Image (cartoon, rainbow, N blue to C red; front, side, top):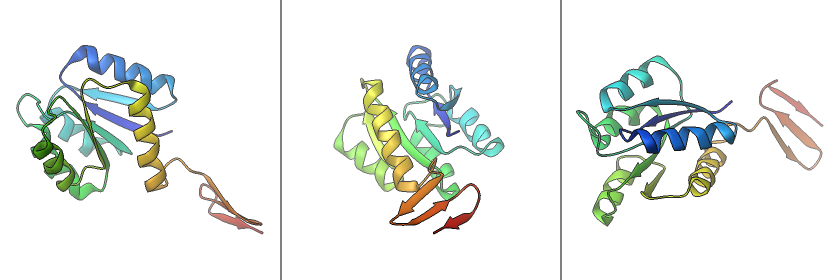
Length: 141
């Protein structure tokens, strides 16, 4: 199961996003500030982090610098809609940048796109008569 960490200080948004993610079949943890986000990243292996920028204490940009060397996919979810903020977030290493308000269906589509790019959650790949099973580490012709 794909594991997602949501770092969001607005509880109503967090509850809505986690509910949508769980309904779509994803595992979701939630923390409300940057420091707890860093601690969660240190304790558990996540496939994707959904990261707000305007967080109490450590902000999302600063936390992104901490997360970036760990090679975890990050999608910013933020009210900061200035082009300079978007460019800054992407240059820090984020895979995507979504501004609030957003629709959960768009978020799910963007998560799926990141998973496809990273080949996360894919257990079988076929090409012609060749089948590769990434869970079993096997190739069948």
